[in-house]
Image 1 (cartoon, rainbow, N blue to C red):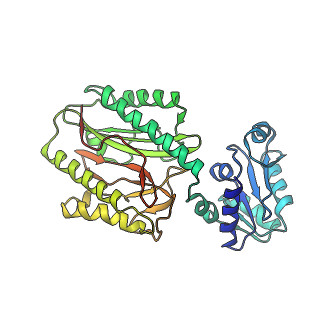
Image 2 (cartoon, rainbow, N blue to C red; image 1 turned 30 degrees about the vertical axis):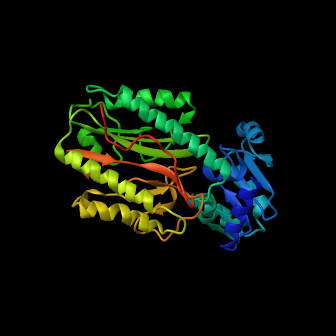
Image 3 (spheres, helix red, strand yellow; image 1 turned 90 degrees about the vertical axis):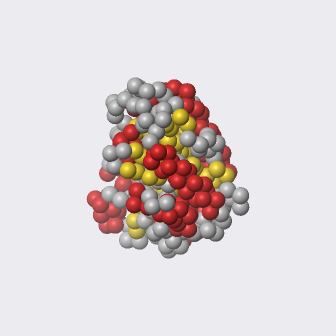
Length: 354
């Protein structure tokens, strides 16, 4: 935790700040070890304070690491307590709430809103974080094994999701709370698979379906993310061709990952191959993204990214092909960037036919 705080303060200094205030639970957790309803303060001397409503104080004291814990009333009380602690400092906060920022600016003249110090610090994982991500990835591989054994024609997407989530919860894996979906997983059969972020439905798997199974779950705070696409019996020649193209594209993307490689070059490695095979118009999203305390965090693995890969970044590589009203295919792994990158998922990428 001490090193994380040093990293946060170093990144704060890059934007001329000496104090960080975390409102978002992910940043609070990274800074303190506590995930809950509270505000975290990190001062230039490393002193760390949690300001929390009374109902969270007991847990904050138990779960945080080397923090002072202050009790305050929800709402105005929390903000007033924060102001008392930081009003003379040069402050950076991740707060995106307009009314809260307006209140803070009235009393703290040297305050700015920026997520940059938080995301830049979190982009490089420490050994504890990597260990957790590896364990999370192993559990997801076990869930793909369940898919290979429990999927069947006539089964509903929602029924498979239930089977998978029962196992996930037994392993202490939880929903990410990702705001853009109503479901913990993506299970998308047949034409539903052509929607990269499909919602789980009661559609039954049919013979000839491809089923996109995207498992994105949280373990001890950290998110691992992987996708496999399964076949329900014999699939069309076009679907088979497209599957092999995505598989090779993903292989080329993984091979391109290395220290000091530009993220946009990883995207290009995947995209160029799919384009050469005349499916470029059907690859409709970026090649990957960072993972950690959020489903999507820095770095972005896309043609727009200016980031270079550094040791211990955690990213996904996930090319796909999506043909409207027919099928979708995505193959995704999470990996740790090293001199020899660690692909954290071992489940086969050969087409598994149910």
